[in-house]
Amino acid sequence: MRLSILLLFMLSSICVSGQNSVHIKGKINNGLRREVQFFVWNNYLEYKPEILAKSTTDADGCFSVTFNMPKAQPVQMSYGAEFSVNIWIEPGDSMSIHMVRQMKMTNVGEEPSFDKGNVIFSGAHASINNYLFNADLSIYDPKTHLAAKKRSLGQYKLFLDSMENARLIQKKENLQDALFSEAEEYIYGEVVSSSFANKEMSRVYKRDMDRQDTLELNRPGYNDFWKNWKFLSDRALISSGYRYGLTNYFEGRSSLHGKVSNDEMRERYFAEAYATAHRELAGLPETREYMTAFFLYHMLSFVASKDSAMVLASRFYREFPASGYWPIIEKKLRIKSNVTGAAPEIIGFDTNNRAVNLRELKGKVVYIDVWGSWCAPCIQEFKNSVKLAEKFKDREVSFVYLNMDDTDEAWRKAILNNKLKGYHLRVDKKAGDKIKDSYGIAFFPYYILIDRNGMLMSNNAKRPLEIEQDILKLLSTPSDN
Image 1 (spheres, rainbow, N blue to C red):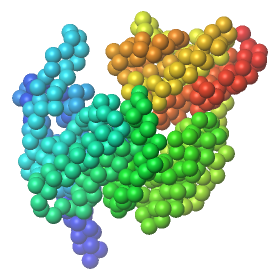
Image 2: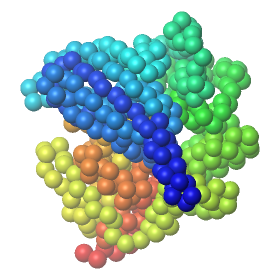
Image 3: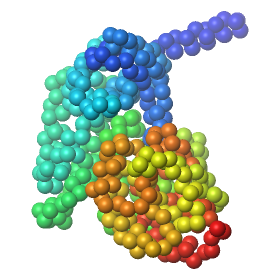
Image 4: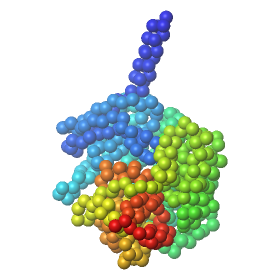
């Protein structure tokens, strides 16, 4: 009897595994052999990839993979460093992918680039994936951001509405069958929820607003579109568009929204957003867990003081002791609470391609600005950074601009355009990941302050407008040199 039960258990385990097994074969027409990876994000705070399967295209561009898929969700497929595409996959799926992408001419020695091309899916959920591709929802398309620069804020809202309506019409025409509930909420999140977020972020995308934009921004009822926002079920968290909309919704509910100018206000801002999310998401436990973890994580990342964060962390742990987000938050707390000892090593390449170890700057106060050319807040802070550097140009202070996640060309162009003087270093992904882990860097811009003895004073230092007194204090402290 015991043997029969054991055999039955083993067979049922095999069946479950078989039911969850996903098979994908594909062909990419471009004549290049490249590694193909399928991955999901291990969590929504750190956004680190969890690899599901790897393969390499053969001489004909063909590949085949099999992996286990426990639940329905979008999976990202990457092809070398050239491009990536989101694919909707459910347990037990079997599908084919045929990609035709034209190679664009590049300079000698540079990696080739590709146009959007065409992707045709067949097999399981082909209609969903063909729709996602044709509606520009599966391959990143920056046209929403670019549209903001060319239009007034009012026109940009109308553009987003028209794009949302067009995608919903496409959905109605191409997805007539009833969808799995996760797929339905995923598509709604990508089409509708992301539209709310893009409207909220329009002032950031635009950067240089004219008089008409300023009038529109200050018009009563400018943010009335949020009145139509609706919370979806916990299943919708698989949609990055929905998560993006959620964060913008709760940030906008803070009384300090758009008024944050110093560390104390940032602390209140995130605390308010945490409290509002906790209150309004009472009936959505997974969404409440994610959003409160999100604002706590950001408070730990962007606020120098740790007092409020410690209180909220204790509250979060009492409510979600088994949360998968807790180890990430606990690590941030540990880094923040132990700002002592020598600063972790940072080695990067300067504009002359020379390897530079920042420990060479020992004897000077070092203020590090971690940035990327694609980061709008980073660029906006540069004007304050330039003014600060001018104040200390004859003092023992080194201003270091540490670039991550950027191309060499974009990095050099941004330095030139923003007239940045100081030490300029760039690191590759491997070195960047190590530095992010050592200093607890989650988002840009991020600032680090090191004293003249090479000791880490703050791994989440104040921004350029607020840091002057902290630098003066370190300058008054004798150096060991």
